[in-house]
Length: 394
Ligand SMILES: Cc1cc2nc3c(=O)[nH]c(=O)nc-3n(C[C@H](O)[C@H](O)[C@H](O)COP(=O)(O)OP(=O)(O)OC[C@H]3O[C@@H](n4cnc5c(N)ncnc54)[C@H](O)[C@@H]3O)c2cc1C
Image (cartoon, rainbow, N blue to C red; front, side):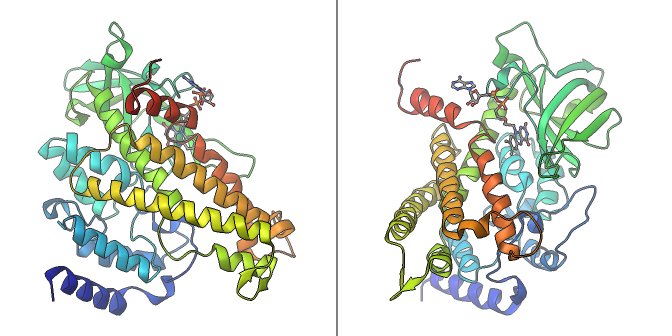
């Protein structure tokens, strides 16, 4: 038996013996696997043991170096591990901006001291991160940001405002873009810093949405002192780091659209539309389900090739915009189709007459509408693909 095959067998046996059976095959709230945070009122304590046992083996970040708490696995072993987790329909042991955005950025652009300080805490789910990029006048045109950071001795002093900061009310740390030079081309005067959210002068105001939830916040900085050692990369060289992080973010968001695993759509369709000899009864809906299944599968394979190359050490480039664009289109299509399949049962908000998954459907469909905005809008991704991938003129 090859080394890879025996790794698969051992991993399968270990997961079957240890992974909590109650977590298998269940739809779940993404919050159930987001750990760390200043206000840890977790609704899902059963996922804690799962995260801890995986962190113990470095398997919350399987491909990261063991000296920072990762698993040290190469790409092939990482794929086997992910495949076995998917086979048992287990949730990822850990998710969040630490794992998907700032962690890989620190591994690439951080100093040894910065990696040693932050990456092990990310792998153990101890720290929750938020992203201080967007400002009221700097969204798509992010490089126009105005939150200022002025050097004062060993510190930078930050003043200004961010907006749409997802989870800032729960986060321990923020990675934040600041303006450190206003006299040069806008991209050249930006610095990327790490900010402890407990620092005096940080104020977070959750934004209440129509649904009643507050998934993101306004974040204000009043003379907030950040040690200069928290700068990632060069002072005034933060745009390079910011773009690298966006590559990771866009790959992560886009990847949602092409998740390979057991598909639940055909069963859902039969449950609501009817089953005729093993087929979805309505031919038009059957066709839509089949088309989406094919598109998800082929996109999933393309994403897998991309993920393989990331795990082999390549950094995401402008092509991550393609994944972000198409992956979010697919996810929105899937949500729209699920709404069509469930019919009036997908229109409930609260009260009698609806199952819990039906009520959740209304909310996930509404939430999916933000997919084409978060992480950079679809229009901006198309611009990037046109200019930086296809080389088209402005
Ligand atoms: C769910 C969600 C979570 C988010 N979380 C965070 C977070 O944690 N941290 C953070 O910093 N930000 C976050 N954001 C903000 C997000 O990054 C911005 O909303 C996004 O970059 C767009 O910026 P904007 O809202 O200012 O829109 P604008 O930039 O004002 O754009 C308005 C419209 O104009 C279009 N447009 C703008 N410029 C062009 C152009 N050159 N060509 C063609 N069309 C153009 C856009 O596509 C859009 O349709 C989040 C947003 C959402 C929806």
